[in-house]
Length: 94
Image 1: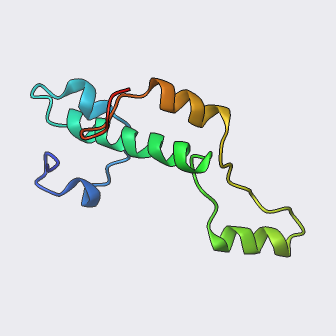
Image 2: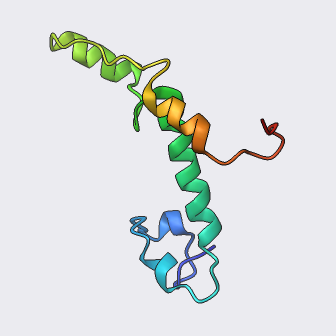
């Protein structure tokens, strides 16, 4: 997928605002949007946060005297997601 100027989206200055998805007459951007949202959902389900803390973040917090950011193993979000999300291809139905 390219921008109107023939540049790949990553090189076109795309800000991921979603406007193109709203106006695209062919629906070409729709699968990309759904795929990206699913990746973000999986990150939250797995780590309990939208942006898991990197080692650098943890070291910086330690130097500043802040407590580490802990990723949650089991929380309400994971439970809700497991009970409500659509099954991926190949996953067994209960």
